[in-house]
Length: 258
Image (cartoon, rainbow, N blue to C red; front, side, top):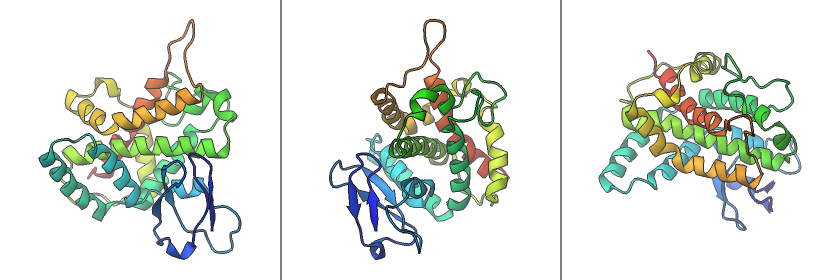
């Protein structure tokens, strides 16, 4: 099977039989980037569809987000405690529903063709959707750059998801939502609260889990000259991004609502 690294674009050839059915992470031999790889469907030819690979949210992708969070956990006892809870989460992780929610939400955020700035879940354009705010820049992106941005947003949301699980969850049996029902319950709640006004303990949990992911996506923005604001308007980039990891936190809230 032919594929391509979503970060540097180098092509690669891999034996499809060596990829597990549920997919697996691969590391680019050129730039050392880590990305998720799935088997090519029967009858497909040519290069693998990176966007399709990254749309699938598996327990392994959640593990990648968890491992990045743990790099900031210098206390060994804290790491042991978080690892035990995360291992329990993997056993009950609803990959199908989370994939459906993130795919629809992120694709809507990357929609630069629809007129207007309002996005999913908003009642106004105060916090615009990302691709409307940076319409010119994103409309010029290659498919590889769009894939990169998709992955960065997805990682940020998963960090927020874990910010609820690791400190708060008892991991008692949660309501098993059908994907569409979870999505309809989740989206209106994302922008119903102001993340900046959440209790301090929640803001600290989100910062602990998401700060390194925010650094990565902001570096991507700088690389592509994505800077908001102007002489008469405030830069809303941070407002847009803070809702992404907050969206992950809210997703877990809705998922565990009895």
